[in-house]
Image 1: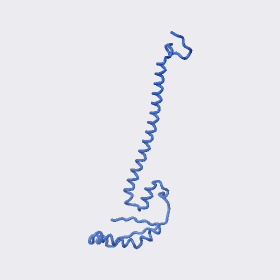
Image 2: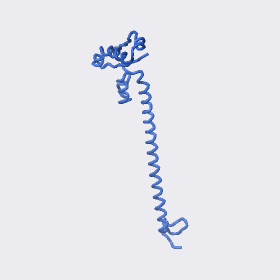
Image 3: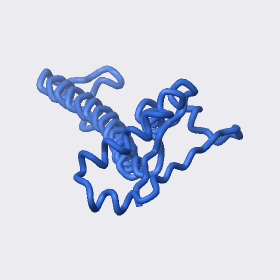
Image 4: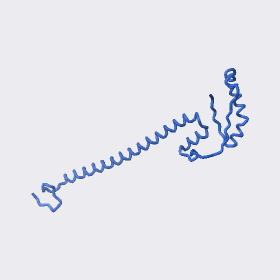
Length: 145
């Protein structure tokens, strides 16, 4: 058995061969690939979690948009669509004027007239103050009972 310099021999005392070097390179390359794959897996896992969070937010916003539309003015819905975290949505004190409009006899009108005529009457009432409302940054929420 040939003598080898200190630290360059196998545990058995034999000298490392070209085949041993080739095996070591293969193991090293496979280890590097495994580490790279683990890093990619971690990034994908984190990205997937971020996408799930974003999807939940979108689903929540869609739910809010669908149901909130029944209760709030269109301008508020537009703010929520543009930026759900908008500072404009924060609670604040503000003086407001609220106009409740009820057309006397609306039920009997809607029962006796065709829908087009009823709509024309409602539009006539609204048109009398609509320009003033919009000029003062007002909004409308129609609620029928």
